[in-house]
Image (tube, rainbow, N blue to C red):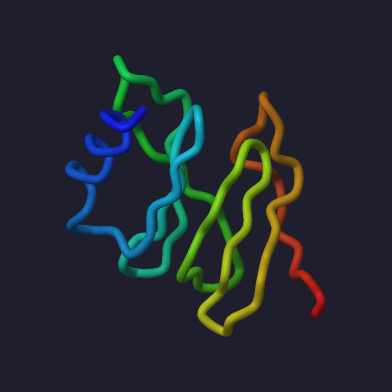
Length: 99
C-alpha cells in the first residue's frame, strides 16, 4: 500500500493541493479547487483515468475512510458525500453538515 501511495504522489504532486487515499482508490483536490478521484487502484494498477466529482463549492481538503468521504470548502464548510458504496464509489451528492 505504501508503494501505491508513493506512486500516486510522485505522479501527481505538481498539480495537487490535497490527496486522500483509501483501500481501492484516491481522491484529490487540484490546485484550481477541482475535486477528482481515481478508483480501482492496486499495487499493479497505480494510476488510472480520473473522474470529476462535482461540487458546487470550491474544495480545499478531502478525506476518506472506507465508504465515507468528507470535504472542507474554501468557505470552511464541512461536506459529506452521500451515495458512496462499493458500486458507486464517487457517490451522488454532497450535503453540508450543520454545526
